[in-house]
Length: 333
Image 1 (cartoon, helix red, strand yellow):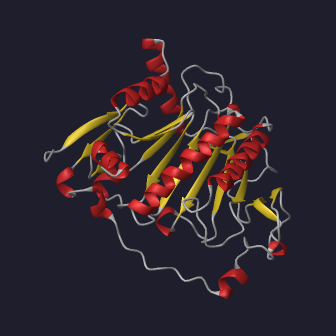
Image 2 (tube, rainbow, N blue to C red):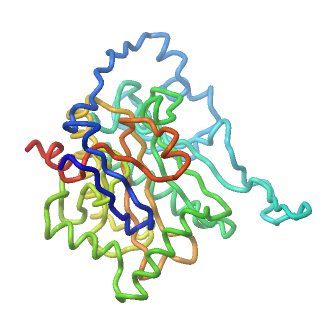
């Protein structure tokens, strides 16, 4: 397809423009990164490396390791948190304006003691420990009745917002629900009210039937590029079992999630030369954890291009490649 096309994202209600004339094939976006040398000084000064634990606040949770290493994953408080749990959630009027204290919780999850690793190069067993760490901290955050939403995310590379090389994720809990999340829930609610079915379950069934955009599958999860992907090689990892809340994931599903997450990231790592990316686990907000129209999933967004004026002004994404072509590329076809 050489002409442009617009597709509606059913999950958000937003349109996405596809302009394939801007790029010939998915691998055209690859940029050869210089090999990053890690010096002994980097390891000595990195606050996340083993031996430097005293630089940080005391650990909140650790999964112990065998041998010389003391831990596999380590959870610490964010040194510069945007939100803290000491304040009140009461709303305060200032004339026509409204404020509230920055109530919330924020932690850093150190994914490995090895400074040079990334999830794409860790073993599946190591990623399983990370998913277990996510799950335990998610459940702990949701015990706070003032918390309305918990977001688990990972920034990989400077273009994605990572400030430290050492592999780590973050988890943030907020006392508010942002408008875009409410909007997405409302889109799913309208779909359910019309069809009496979960939008995401229908998406999943359709993608499995079509197989055009599926890039991976196991007993519990499907990895696919969404029909209206906002960026090149965007991938969704979605549980086959309907579940609104990441907190309800089973032991078997955690293992399968680790397997498909590591596999997809390894594929992106090798096919796109270790690009910068973000991923986010989109889970139900409080009071919607049992809703039939909400379905949690993990969204991976490679940072292969930069939004320009039109996209910022209109809030309409322009994707230079079709999802079907990206799926073929990631499948090696």
